[in-house]
Image: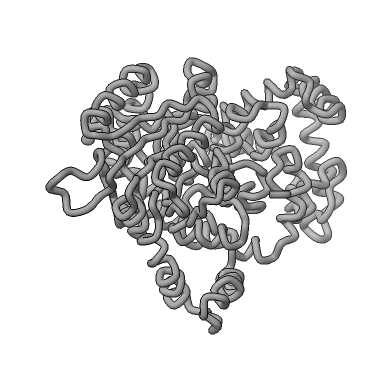
Amino acid sequence: MEFMQPGAFKENANTAMADKNLRSAMTMLNDGMIPNRQGAVDRLPEFEQLSQRGRELKDHVLAHLDYYLERFERNCKAAGGHVHWCATPEDARQAVLKICQSVDAKSVTKGKSMIAEEIHLNAFLEQHDIEPVETDLGEYIIQLAEEPPSHIIGPAIHKTKDQVSDLFLKHHAKLGRTERQTEPPKMVNEAREILRQKYFDADVGITGANYLIAETGSSIIVTNEGNGDLTQTLPKIHIVIASLEKVVPTLEDATTFLRILARSATGQEFSAYTTVSTGARRGDDLDGPEEYHVILLDNGRSAMLGSEVQDMLRCIRCGACMNHCPVYQSVGGHTYGTVYVGPMGAVLSPALLGVAETKHLPCASTLCGRCEEVCPVSIPLPRLLRQWRQRSFEAGDVPAAERWGLSIWAFFAKRPWLYGLGARLAMRGLAYLGRKQGRMRRLWFAGGWTQGRDLPVPEGETFQERWRKQQRKKVTG
């Protein structure tokens, strides 16, 4: 995709800010996901304890990752499954292709999988005359639009209802659906009816995995549409694609994460479908695949172990950080130019793709700390973003103008009395210049801030001055 270029973040952001449809679509974060999450968290008194337990579990697994992965492999094989270790995306693609070719597959159904997006699996399968069919509604929409996902749990969150309606009419008309549907239930039913036969035609079903269970060799997927169940039970072969850090010790441990995942993601108490798969169909099973394969992808994860960004491997892919991020809310996911977006993507993508290619992404943050506050496993995202910024600065990847500006700021920051004087003069100057309108539409040397918003004019005092006044009032009573 032309816009999938992380080095073009600034240009992409300017385009996104001018997109009225995008800005309209992104309002659903503040209108839906954010208040729904808070409500779900408030209704679970032990949420913080579960969050702490989840963090401890993740840290424990990462400290013993080799043990749990080997245990998962043994138990998966004991249950009749197959495990494929893949160091690179190409290794994973070739493993999938070989499995598909073993049954001469012409089409595969796919449940939502960010790892499949990470390795660009759809385009690869098409090159080998295998049709990939996305069955998650959001993924189906963006497949028709020939776009990558813009959110890890809401792939088509950037689309308005009218855009989806137009998209369905364009692609479904050749299938005899010539009436433009405008009501969401009818649009969903139309997509469901078209996808129904695809499940029966596919020889292979591919899903991701929210968790891999070491004690049983099982995989768990969490969905709200039931498409994951059809994808993995109807075809001859079920392929699970997952990254190394998805393993957890036991089924009981998985329930800890399941109790915080949906609440953090969509504000649900629990997702509609939580499906556990263990091996291939046995003799007395009513359904299920003839073969069960798990592809374990590294692609840079093992290099993160023991590094300063290891905490990122705790991520459970809930999307809460991006839902609450003011930058993501303003520009959407495609602006990042990478598969993983928002604060978590700005930390993970440099680890997977390199700092040079993704140097703009860690800077796509106000460092307000909201992402860390809502993260259910307490990933210190602002600190990790600062670390990538520092690496980029040390590598000389920061433009000369930015380095010059940072040097000036550092000069003042190291001299608090001078910094305070400059802040007081700036506040009084801005207050004077904007005294008539109460806002500033343009701000010198900071045009990026006022390009999409007005700057409220300061009242004339700095924060520290007002704080000191309040403290004096408390003392004098």
